[in-house]
Amino acid sequence: MIKTWQEGDVDSSGVKIHYYRTGGEGPKLILLHGITDNGLCWPEVTEALGEKYDIIMLDARGHGLSDHAASYLPKDHVADVDAVMENLGIAKAAVLGHSMGAVNASYFAVTHPEKLSCLLLEDPPWHLEPQSIVRDNDQWRKDIILRRTRTLEDIMAEGERDNPKWKDYVFPTWAEAKRQVDPNVLDWADKGQTFANWQQIVRDLSCPTLLLTGGKEAIVDEATAKKAAALNSLVSVANMSEAGHSIRREQLDDYLKAVTPFLEKHAR
Image 1: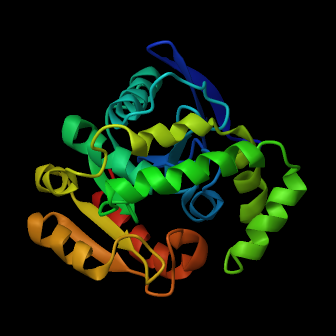
Image 2: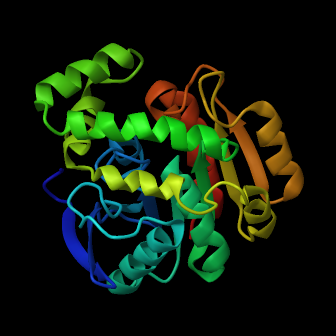
């Protein structure tokens, strides 16, 4: 963590939510990470935008230094974001989410529209099939439990091997997050209808929204992106065709070329 940053904890109905804050000049920008990551897994964004925006990064419940919890549904994550904003006295912010964080951000946008100036969604897992989610998550849960027993160096080596496009500085916080995460965070996808109503969520968005999509290895394909844009005129799409699911980590320059002007125009 950069020395000038602040960090602290907020109580969200009995669950401790940890946050980091850059304290930069300009509008507030809240970052919501993907599942099994943590709030420090945004070094590319904070390096590029940290002086122009007051960036607040949450450790989602069950991740990082936040408490493990009994429930990990989207509504719980939404309540956590609201609790942080209330505690820090933030009336309105731009919100950028990746993967799980993107879905949670979209839920927050439709339930608390007055609190967002704009919304940015990095490859939200919108069209995954429920049956495949449960099947894949059974193995993923076992992998999470095993990873928590391994050394940081071993996890970093795995990440470097599997993600050759990522910058070296990404891996330390990414690996540490894997040792911190509660395996039960996967309930976020297993329980309820997390993805089933994404089209209605998109219809209900009332702020400018930028959907960031990748190539063949990403989740949101071209047809899904076109559908989202057709559902709501406030949704625009920026495609990074050489990136996978972690778009900012794999095609950063183009990512920032899309994100930066969007925030300059809409963040308040």
